[in-house]
Structure formats: C-alpha cells, structure tokens
Image (tube, rainbow, N blue to C red; front, side):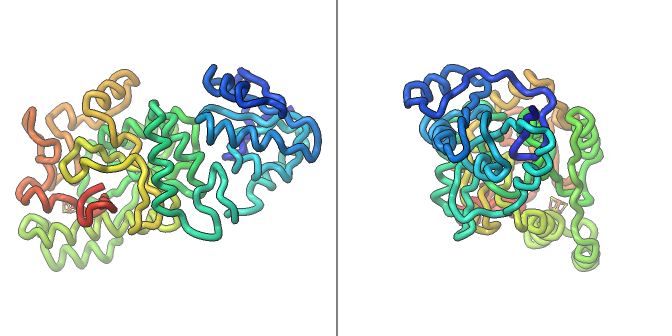
Length: 372
Ligand code: SF4
C-alpha cells in the first residue's frame, strides 16, 4: 500500500493517521461531525468500481462544511480517477498495488487544464477566471484563521502555477514560513534582484533558504534595458524626477515581475491594509486584470502586532535592517529608516509626494492607479 500526494504526485513516507473514515453512505450529520471534529485526515472509502459517491462527499466536505484538512481516498481506486479525485477536493489516495504508482503519476499529468470548474480549478479551460471567482476565494480566505491554511486553500483553489514574489520583508517572511509549513512544494518563489538591493536582503535570502530548505530565485532586470536607462538618466537619475524614478522601477521591477507572472494563475503577495491609505481596502484575494490572474494577499487583514507576534512565535528569520529602524525595505538608495510612529512607507522615496509613492507592481484593481 502506498499513499500518493495527488497535488505533487509524490509518495508520502510518513502519512498522518486517519481521524475519521467515512463510508459512501455518510449523511450530512456525519460529514458535519467529521469536518468540525478534527483537523486530521478524513478518509472516504470507495467500495467498488463505478461507485462515485465518495467524490460527492469530498465536494460537500469542501464546499458546504468548509473542511480544509486532508481528505484521503481509500478502497477500490483506479489510476483514471487520479485527476478527478484531485479536482474534487481529495489530497491523497491510497494505491493498493505499489507497482501501479507510476501509472497513477502519469494519470495525474495527463491533462493540463479542465473544461469544467472543480474544487481545485477556478480556471476552467472554456474561459478565464473572473472577478466573481476571485471574490469567492476572498470570502473563503476570510473564514480561515491560520496563514498556513490560507496558503493551502489558495493552492487548492487555484489550478496552475502560483507565483510568490517576496521582498524578504516581514510580511513576506511570514508567508514564506507558512508556505514551508504547509508542505506545498510547487509555489514558485522569487525575488526581484534590481541590482540596487541592500546586502542584508541577499543575506536574508540565504538565511531563509537554509532555514526552510528551499530556493528563492533571483530575478534580474534585462541588462540592455538597465544600460539604456542609466545612459539616459544617470546612475542616480531616479532622484531627480518622479518620471525618472518610475522609469527605473519600471525597468528594474515592473517588467521583470510581469515576465515572471506571465502564464501564472495565481500571485501571492504580502500587501497589508495597514500599509497605507491606498492599500486600506485591499482584498485577501482579487482578480488582477493587468496580469490576468488571481492575486492573493494572505496577510491583508493582519495588524502589525499580529505580524510581529507571528514572527516571534515562529522564530522566523528577518532582515537585520528592521532592527535599525527600516520598516518597508526596497532598493538601498530609495529606502531609509523611519522614526517610531512614522508611517511605515515614509522611508520609501521620501523626497516624493505621498500619492506618487508606488513602484507600480501592486496596483489596486478597484482603485485605478492605487496600490493593491
Ligand atoms: S526603488 Fe529606486 S533603485 Fe529601485 S527600481 Fe525603484 S527607483 Fe530604481
């Protein structure tokens, strides 16, 4: 007997013990008891070939009872069911014959997209995701309390590539910790290496990689575009005019980010409502028209106190610049420390007017030109 992770196709060597075993005849009361009684795996038994009632039970557990823990398929299962199980809300499946594992794994990658909307794919093939579907995810995330479960829910609900762009700031470090804790391996984690970063940012990259055993890709701007920019505006040209600064952010951040987000279905970012007035109504999940994907801000509703408490409780590595008064940390020439009580964003492009202080990578779809 082998236990297959349906999302990754990997075998699980140390599976959690099943907390509840549901038969296909389970009624609403049994589902409710299973969903609310524990966070441990719920196993659903398939007694015979052609008996699909277990599929419906998994959908009900997810859709109606809000269960976010592991759902495991056990019993009479064939490889052709693999993708269907995954889309219906199952996380794992017992493969009775270990010699069948390769067939199961092949079945999981047989189709890259699906025609019908399922529990795990908000983006069916027949059309792109919509604002409504992003709104549904937003409401789901609002009901989920832990950051790790919010990440899991986003991964479950968004089919295809999810990108996580980290600046190595406090919010992003909290999210990185939750991704590592979730056990999800296929979130694409990267940072924009603008060429003007503080060395402490790169040190934080290494510290985090060592702590979590993962890789944070460094994404560089196009070398030719940087050369042209510097030839035109000078090496510190961004200090002399807002337009120059926006050009610099465009070349070093916006375009590289857009390249990385191309083809992604989801984008995780560390925006919080407390950051600024422009971010006050940012959603936990929202349709991002510019990038044609669902943008997830899983700590949007966190306060600074909640964030620092989470970081302390989990001993999460942070950029040492925070201890020297730097709050929101961007490129070295454009970031300074702030005084206690000062607006956290006051240390970014401090020579500009407040309403112009966005680099253009987080725009709020509800408020044209404002941040999200
Ligand atoms: S933050 Fe400053 S150095 Fe960095 S890309 Fe923007 S203008 Fe250029």
